Length: 140
Length: 140
DNA sequence: CTTGAAGCTCTAGTTGCTAGAGCATGTATC
DNA sequence: GATACATGCTCTAGCAACTAGAGCTTCAAG
Image (cartoon, rainbow over all chains, first blue to last red; front, side):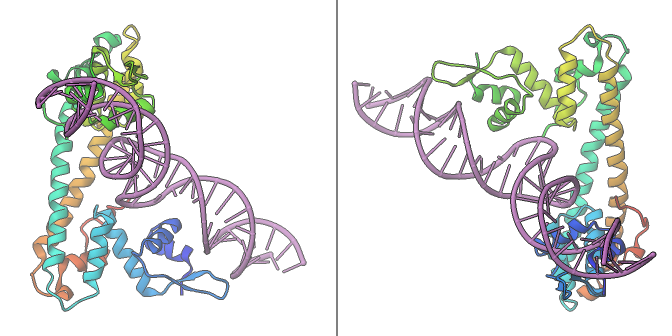
C-alpha cells in the first residue's frame, strides 16, 4: 500500500493534484489508515499514470473521465475511445497551425526592430496597427 | 465619442472584456456621460486595438501592460519591447515543439487502433502504458 | 520522547475572461 | 408623453486545472 506521497512520486503527479482529482471524482475515494491517511494500491497507481499521460497529451479532464470509463469496460467496442483521440488530434493540429502563424508574425516583428527608440519600434508599431500584419485574421 | 458597445464593435473586443480591462487597470477609467455610461475617444480605441492584437498574438496581459507602458514613452530605447516580443516568440516556439510531439503520438495511437473492443484498443493501451510512447518525456 | 517530515481539511488565489441577476438609461416609435 | 426594447450599469459567481497557504494531526527515526 502506498501513501499519497509515494503515489505522488511513483506517478509523477503532485500531492495536492491527487487530492484534487479525488475531489472532482476522477479518482475514487481512497481507503484510509487508522490515522485517516489515504492509502493506495497498484490499481490506483495505474489509473493515475493513465490520467497523467492523458494530461500530458493535452486531453481535458472531461475527456479523461470518459476514457477511464471506457477503459473499465474492456468488451465494449473502442469506437468512442478512438473518437475522443481523434478529436484531441484535430484540436492539437489546429493549435499548431495557429501558433505557427503567430510565430511568423512575431519573427517578422522582432527581425524588423532596428533597436532605436520606441517611436521607431516595429514591435510596438505592428501591435498598434493591425494593417501591418501579414495575416489580418489571426484573431479568435 | 463612443459608447462601450460601439467601442466593442470597433475593436472586436466584447463589452464585458472591456470593463474587465478597465477593472484590472489595463485601460484607464473611462469618462462618464450624465447618466453614468462610459464614453470613449479615439485614443482608447487605438489602445484597445493594441491590446487585442497583442492578445491575439498570445501575449499575456502582464506583458501587454508593459508594452503599453513602453508605447507611452516614444523616446525611450526599444530594447525592452524587443525583449518582450522575443520572449513571447520563444514561448510560442516551445509550445509548437511540444504540440508537434503530441501530434505524432496521437497520430500513432489513432492509426494503430484496429476498431475492435476496448481491450484491444491502442488508444487506451498507450495511455495506460507509457512505455509504448515514442517519447517517454512529453511530460512537464 | 522528541523532532521534523509528511499527512489532513479548508479556504482562497491564479489567468483571462464569461454569464447572470437585478437594476438604470437611452432611443425609436406611436 | 407613453411605451417598448436595446443597451448600459454594478456586483457576484463560475470556468479549467490546478497551486498556495493556514493551522492542525499523524507517522517514522534517532
